[in-house]
Length: 408
Image (tube, rainbow, N blue to C red; front, side):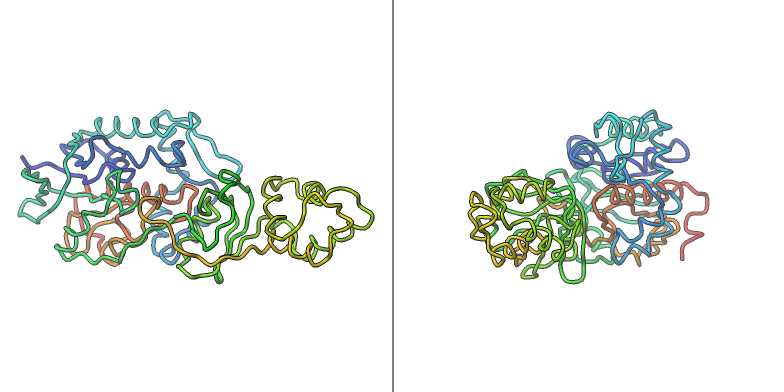
């Protein structure tokens, strides 16, 4: 049998491609794991951060150097289009104060079930535990080999993901098949990962978070939520910055970027003379947004007795305290690996495809969508947005009458 379409990979991009087809087809979705959407179920800590609010023009800067290249992809199926798509499918959404868009149920399973149902309605059959290991061009389209079985289709959408969270099936194994076919690949690396530093001091403060911290590596600066774990720094402020960090780089953390170091030092020093309160009490009253346990750790690191009267605190020790709060500096030991990476940087080079259609320039009828491409964005819904935008274009164009007419 020759199918109309085969989609390789039942992740966010593959499922959305199948769900957004302009008409029903006789097709397959090949998934190497026993169930679809395993990584999608993990997105947004299981709550599924589908996209981000605001103007789509503001998205471009969140994709690094490749942001300008995918501008038209994002514009043609933007965040409002994503929101409308899911609401039309009966999923109520809401936008948080930080701009992240979620289903009101806060259940990624609702999104997954809706996409799977839409794929089935569009005529697609799922073949689970079907790891594609090779594809070849035939006179009728493409033949995909899955172990000892083969399937042929007129059109092919490759949405196999990158290398992040390999246990979910997104392990990069299909890149070798792409390389064999002469597809240019950009070397891959983990992205959006925790940062491990030399002499990490907060192992006993695991779980403490800061809603508004500022992290800096070189000329790159990011302000967002920060999380302390038992052995590393994490949270969006770290994850987003990790895309630009390398081992041995210096990372600087400002836990209270609301005021400058000079202002904090001036205001605190003016409150010390004659103050009989404990140093820790004064710090907590001045910095109520910072957890008290963290301030205790800061005092210990600065060599300050938090129980001592504030009036006895020397200016030099106060400066040491303030510096640790606004300029806590470390040397990066290593970055998290693929097992903790939210996305993968690298993949199929954008030079291989027509941005207008997501079709291969070398192989008519072959399309790419999602993380398999050399596109990675910040946390906050940007990576799912690209997965949806690219897969929507692939879905629309793979069924167009004149495939490849727009290739350039």
